[in-house]
Length: 325
Length: 302
Image (cartoon, rainbow over all chains, first blue to last red; front, top):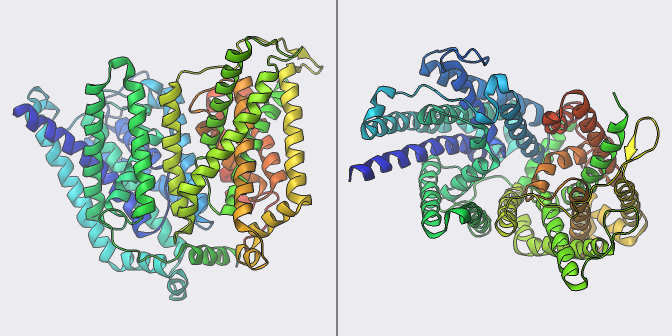
């Protein structure tokens, strides 16, 4: 019974960290229409930044400033936000596909740096000994898991409330206006690119914060945590939940993570150990097919509303004419 | 620094360039960037490998053609593999992409291709496991050709094959009615439709060319490097970078872009180290997007 509660807390903590990433993606894609297929890179940036800021001094590496965890989280948001802003500045005046390709490249490069800049990132072995909040409670796993769940829930709730507020604020209304009728919004004197860069940066900062939270929750990070499979999972979560809705983003994350963890447990029960790597790839196939089916049948997600968005064709043309003028 | 990087770069560049042709055609005619293109490459290679295995089972061991490491089975298998890849692309278009392209936002198709890419790649891992494999384990002796450059017979054959294919595709798209229809579709789909162009057939030709070339590029990687389920996915960024560097829609541009990126990668491997190779395409991509987003031979979008 106690075990079950402990596992439940662990499961929910992971799911809520995923929801935080999904919330960031929802701001970028659901609200603003910016396509990010490299979000694993931004999550990794956050995790590594916070790890480097907070780990105890290490003579072999460059990092290890031993700062408080909160500073690590703020630093992660800052660096993640700046990285996203730079990506946005370089590509947001162009066709939306270019942003997709560039973010994909960002994830590749972040992965490369994590693997090869050994002095900074520990290379393939990653960074260990990341301070954990309530590390003193690690003796009693249940209490430890519950206190972590509390802290992650609080951060997710704060992000949710802030995003809900932002969505309804004048700033959020400009983003919606840009999405629904870019030309009209521009004619009212709103700079499309400026607002989009802001939304992309805030989204990136939230993703980085999620990465940092996860790093401190597990206490250890390695490049393998941030492969394209992560990007893919989060996209499925957002699409299942219905892009555009913050509550949907959280619900979709918990649901998809439950399916993922459940099918993972199922394969480990059903298959022999040497077959498990193969079974795990079948699990990814299933989720990939699920994403395609949802896109075909209900492109606005299981809980999403019917489209309110402007037609993409219109969007591209006006972007093109804007960049051409 | 040894001039060997020129040969290495041209070979990598050929693989990237052949792949980038498909990316650039899909982007300009079907109007979405296909993230599953790399996985066409991997699927084509594994299909070819399977056919090679089947031929070996039927005819026993076939001696390779004099200086090359492979014999007629690989050539036959490549044709079958390319046909299979083309069918795979057509099938995916029928069940997925053609429906997603009809939806209001074109970016939905990109997302679908991302999901399809993940599923295709993992399916390969399921069938063949992620262990690398090879067409031939024979080691070829590289011949010196002067200036400190060495090249193997396989490499020469594949460079000639690339040149022939690029020329063929270029002639097809510039000199035939099908090619002109493709250009019309990429420049103005609505007008092309009104002018009576058979849109469905243009779409089919686009997929067939892109997928068949992806298969050839994949087999080249298989012959010269190794075969892995991830081989195509790892080529995705270089292919996108090459297509954008050359200018979306331009076939000579895609090939030239591929060669430039291949040479830059090979140079970087010599100067900085092999582990940073993948960053080269990203740096070139960013530079193009900032300085000249329409690429070398691109036309401004209408």
